[in-house]
Length: 443
Image (cartoon, rainbow, N blue to C red):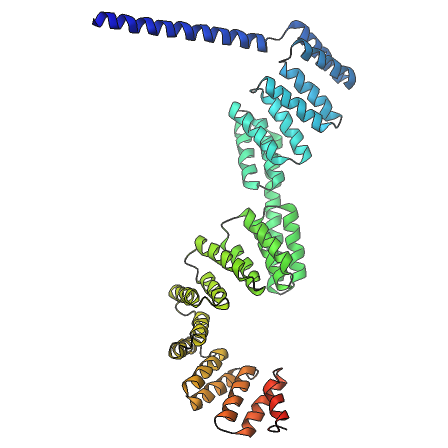
């Protein structure tokens, strides 16, 4: 019984073997027919080459067409015909012909290389890089293909990738002049770009924003993927109040480097300034996702939540900012404002006191704490805070307004109230002084 089973298994294996052998034989013969080049086709091809040397492109194309008619899978003939179209400026037709060559022989490197060169001429760099990459997978020892892919990368601004390609080309052929030259050009561009970027930063620090933008423009012309130049130019436009231009530059910086937290923060700052809180929150959240140890985006996002009355989220963000930066007095100040709006005066008082403890010269905190003290009935202490704010900053308009209100409404000291409101009016806030004059309290 066992011998019979073994015999059946052997017969099945034998049949499968015969079937595979026949299939491979048919496939091989078909491949031979497909890629066999007939003498007549070779003669027409060589005749076409001869016409090309004489610059007779018309007859050259006729000969290549004849070679292709005789042998439809003659990839070399397609490539030469494509080259003539390329020389004649018929780039789209050349691409079509090179594509036909690739269709006839998907492993013909010259066709990928030639089509890639045309794509570069047309500015379709990604398609060119795809062709060069395919050619490299077929033959990774071709220095010419690495060199041309390096050129395409350089023209796209991918300088590190270009240098890597040039290095590979030089590793294969140390005398590849095109690769050596391309590498040298990139190093020169990178040096010049870095220099102009530094000049831009120098002008930015001096608040010479026009000159800074001029320098960043130079950088971007030389290095279109120099992320820092777009970011820095965006900051310059922001300082000039040109927010739309700033946003365009921050968008470009993010596109080049999607993990640039500073670009998200800066773009969020513009949205915050424009009161586009939803977008600002999105950007600050992205910045937090990239770097969760940075206190600033939590603080800024907390301000957004405060403005849209999401108090719990605002307080959470301010607390998080403070946990990351214990002396972040601005976060304490904003948290105090939220507590004040929620009528949690004791907590607000504590927040503003913490601000003053960290930064005793922050006049706004004294105004805020004084305002809380008025709500708590601590009027004399409130006046002391308003007076301290004025001592620190004689132009702190709200300190004059608030102190005047306490003098008038609580202590009935009309003279001091009018003096404070008059000073506030000189600083641009005339509401209380105007009302008091109409009612005859102030002259």
